[in-house]
Amino acid sequence: MNGEIVFDYRETGDFVKGYELEALETQVLAAHEILHRYEGPGREYLGWLDWPLHCSRDDVEKILRVAGQIRERAEVFVVIGIGGSYLGARSALDLLGHSFYNNLPRERRGGPQIYFAGCNLSSRYLTQLWEIIGQKELVINVVSKSGATLEPALAFRFFRTMLEKRYGKRGTRERIIATTGEKGALRNLARQEGYETFPVPGDIGGRYSVLTAVGLLPVAVAGIDIAGIMAGARRGCRLYSEERSANNPAYRYAMLRQILYRKGKVIELLASYEPSFLFFTEWWKQLFGESEGKDQKGIFPAGVNFTTDLHSMGQFIQDGYRNLFVTTLWLEKPALDREIPVLTEDMDGLNFLAGKTMHYINGKACAGTIMAHSAGGVPNLKITIPEMTPRFYGQLVYFFEKACAVSGYLLGVNPFDQPGVEAYKKNMFDLLRPPQK
Ligand code: PA5
Image: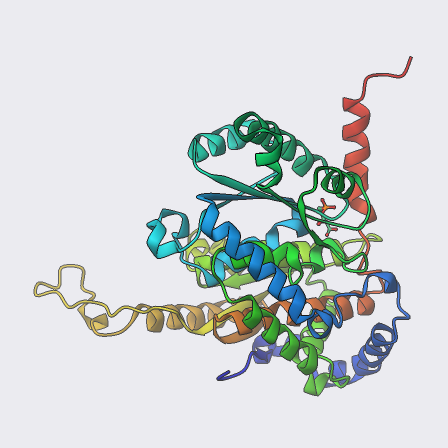
């Protein structure tokens, strides 16, 4: 693996002083200690901490075997899940796959088209997805740790009914893979019907589950190297277990976030310069939002995709209310690059860029934006990823998981529960259930 993921906080200007980092170091050491001794709040959900080291070759091989069968058999593969049960897979597919994967010819894809369902309650979305699927050979992967989440449960009902009509009970059984926890309605149904299953470990929460079969199976169906992802995660696991923040960029990132938060920077914008980061940003938003937003505290995680959003949100970031900081994800080497062509008649006046590459220009846009936002009073953090390979994807996921856990402990919350999500569910079910006589 060439290069290294680098965390850089030089563009925080006067917002962060050396002595503030020193002062926080003892708290980071304490957070590291309780995390690694499994003594902190939410310790029953720390399965992710050593998961890259524990996940066995057999686990990965079973995923590859089932994915291989799906790649051969299916024309369309639908992943049904919501929150932590789909965002990770979607982020990896976007970052590591082709930007227009579903539109590629079958020979080029090598596997089925991949769609997501059960991540909303929209009948328009579902109906139009069915229209796209038509009579194509279909395999579905229903992903729900609890097996009780309404959105995927309803989508699964629709798909199961449709499959049963088309293929009968036996044919349906062969086309459903359930990724679920040890208990619950989906696990019981899978047992009863004899579906192929993958486990979601009880001690790994949804938003920390991308490196289990939850994320790895859909990614393997797209032909992406999941062993490489896990190798990167293992490397992250080793690198980000250093207890001193000077040697641990994940801890430095956690510290910087908390220092800025304590100074009123209550919104963090994750900015990227490649559209393929859109769903990674969604995954990151869930990770930090659900982990830290509790007890009336927390940094609000938001996302922007540059340069697109410089033409919409740029004004606010530069000049609006000063309560935010930006963390830029920068990809050092893009998978593909193109030179700007020279025009005989320089009608657009851009010939001075001819011969330069798109990525070079993107890089200047990034540098110029960070300079402008810094000057506008926005502290900037930057994470540079050498290139978007499966290994760096796995390492980056682990970087954020570890940073989030420590950041949550520094904030004084339990980063592994999500009591707040229950409130809307209770109201919704109260409104849906017929009144008791
Ligand atoms: O992080 C979480 O726990 C949640 O976002 C869940 O992933 C989401 O609610 C889906 O839950 P389940 O997998 O149980 O259907």
